[in-house]
Image (cartoon, rainbow, N blue to C red; front, side, top):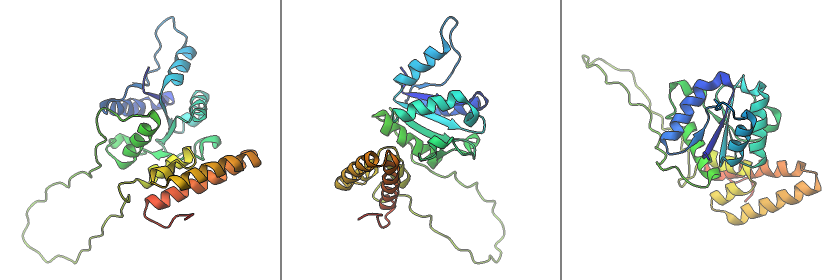
Length: 239
């Protein structure tokens, strides 16, 4: 049984292979190579691996949004709350998956040492229930190439701008948003406000029952945005 199931269109095999390798180097076991041994049923193998995986990564691209196989696998993962959607091209996922926060890896050909990949790893660790055997590496921009010495010349005035803070108290705003989008209130638990998270979860259940599911989505959006605001150090949507 693999920790992770990687769902993708055959046109995106190169990206899937690179992503599977990067995840394996972090210590995860990944099922992604769809070549099936002779004499075995393709659908049975897929179904078994999909059912046993702790987390399912779906790569959305112009090819995969047209693939019925990928959509079926994504739907099953979403039903079991194990889905981590990743866009590798600037496309709109199928309608039923657009309410989920999606990671973007548009520049995957340039390598995966980027903040979006770290966000993917954090979402995987949450859904899989344990961390990888190797820690998530901190993101560090590539070092600038050495400058060639030149004769001193008058230089125009330059201004340096500090990069905006990405987290408050060690919390990642995007991860907080993803958690509440997946399960209402979990983002508030992540931010340390257990009471608010419990209230939002109960509100979502009640609203969903009274409105045939519509109210659940409204509270989920509310919860996700509140979790993002608090993790970013901004005013909460609901105090």
